[in-house]
Length: 579
Image 1: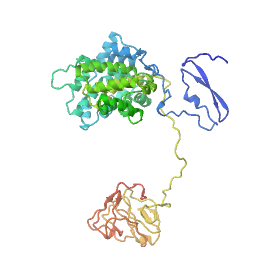
Image 2 (image 1 turned 120 degrees about the vertical axis):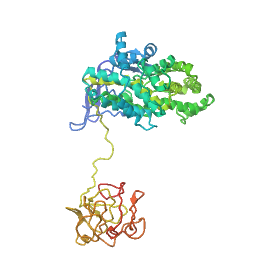
Image 3 (image 1 turned 30 degrees about the vertical axis):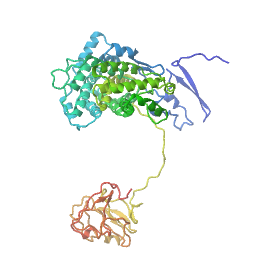
Image 4 (image 1 turned 90 degrees about the vertical axis):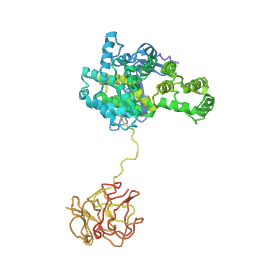
């Protein structure tokens, strides 16, 4: 047996691919453990056929970019920002230091940090028109929706942000966004409570200032407990970046069109708004409340195994071992509850974690607590409502989004994101013709109607019999001599007050349906509302279950001088054919 030389995962090499459809073989280069999708596109059954594409819903195994911002080893439970382990950053750094690290690629010196902190602090204020804009939302508007709209609106206040090729301009926009996100988040929180917006206090640090804008009332100066400030700062650090997740991918995808960073980050906020991305910690709280007390945990565990319950806050798509952020957050819980008092749900959470980690069923499936398992308990201890959880997530994630956006802008390999699709569905159908010579079905009518009408959007009166219609200068008219004895369809733009009874020429006003009648023997099919002839005097035509209410014996409305007609907007506007 020939020995196979040991290679590392990222070692360069090639992949030999044999296409069994044609018998052809291809050499596909391997670089950094990846192959280029474009190289697979060279594999095709003929020159005219499309190349082979990769079908990968959700990007389960697709690398869309090169990135040095964050490194994750899910099997080993490793998370690093620019090469620094998350555990060290959470312990020794604050959020603004980590934000600087993510964007600039290295931790700041003292002078760099002082300048950075000064820039951020003195850009926390927003234009007064932004305040007016936010005050225009409904009293019960979701804070995340307010934040998404407000971040996007900032692009209109800073039109120079579109000049993304200027490094100094890019820097200023990133400073502004990191600085203003807490202001927008705090104001969306207070808006839902009907409280006045609190302006930033530049004497306070980044996280302390955020807490002041959230909770300050009548006191001259709000000073939060340092333990709460540190705990929230750590949560911001833990959420600062996480490789190519859903929201980061949204920022990069939108940013690839070379749009301004505010619009790109607004896309990330929108992605985070979704419950599959930013709503997991709220789901954990609901689960813990449903369990109710520690004595109910064994029954709940059995329900999970049977498929009747969902264990929220355990397992992760990336981490196949423990989530390193969960260990840090668990310690932050202890610090917060020293100040706020213990949340009764904490005891349930700890017992649930203990039982799950000792149960072979969960250990075998590598279901360990993730960052969301304890974060919701901390946010609740701060007295945040669940709808604010994703706002806090977005504030912490902003430096990561901006670092990824900056990397995208500077990456010469990047192109505007345009995905391929796997063709599906029926193809090469023949569309029905709508020419005047083509017959069209009328649901609920005896045939026939041919051709469109000159005033779309109104319920057409039944034209029945075997007549056909032709286009004229004034609209549509019957082609047969017998048919011209009936009133003709209306012409657009007519201003006459009502149709003339028995007219053989002229136009109908645009607000009257065409009452043309060719054959006296045919009539519309039931059911019809009302009795008698065409609408009685002063009776409006109305819509019933999406259909107009017609009298049982249709007649030309010309016989009723004072009738009123009303549009049924639910009917097609392009032709009288019903669907």
